[in-house]
Image (spheres, helix red, strand yellow):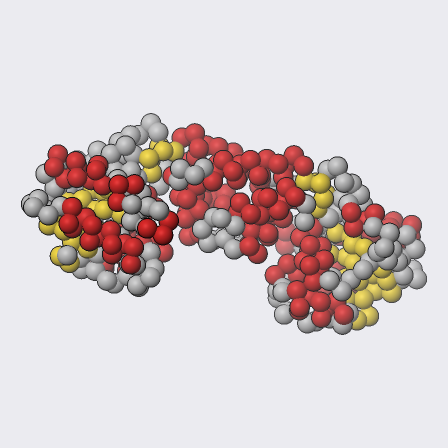
Length: 198
Length: 198
């Protein structure tokens, strides 16, 4: 395989859900077809780079000209309930599932000593500020179900000790070891409905 | 989901092996992470667009400064045996499998009335010219195993009637309904060894 193709394969294989074999097939597909899917993909990626950003308030994905995002400025949503997620993609998954009418806060990851990520690399300072400013009554921790997320839950619970805020967590309707973005809407909706006090 | 992201998801979902769900996860991954995988991917795709092309002789993927490709100019390869494949990616799969020391000819598809592709949309004229010029003794048809490929085999057999060239086909060690690029190297190598007269 030629070197530019091999380089493309390696970058593609770093995308979620793409193995080495699929990356090879995609690279080949992009390399030789006359319909110029490569140009279309380049253009679509350029537009995302130019126009898509993160909401300065909640951290979810939004367009740069809509900031804070539409979820944050929607007055019909309950400002007293805040749903905390790890990644911006999780907001999309939960909105698709329905069953939640509050607002969101994206942590941008979880506590992960293995990859050198401590609590203060997350958007926790912003979380505490929002809880105080927005007089939040309930914090729903919609984190993934694995050990590192459990550590994050424990840290947040300790961090907020003494504040008048109820902390709940998604019901373990999620399969253990899996993640929010991977779950089907029905499972997510059940987990949201069955959320329980930590 | 924002419109530029939705556009990116739709382009991504047209890539082989990528469903709607995976496309959404990839788009999210590209949109928000600080490590700038998006820029790396854009750059790798740009390099492929600039430097990768098709061999003017066999039609396989090569770099634009190596044309004809390294397989075509390798004098150790048997010029009298020509392996005909549908797509450039099939050449890579067969080379990985080993067991073939001749040269290749890429048809760029197969006869497919459903998608309006007739015999003369393929590189068949070039194939006949090569057979005559290179005094080819054997033509190995390494096509996929489905009805459209069978029609292509039949067409090539009729087209070459009267010429002194033996036409063989990969042994049906390939699972019917699947394709060359999908098969593991061992299966491909067996199929190459067991090739039979049409």
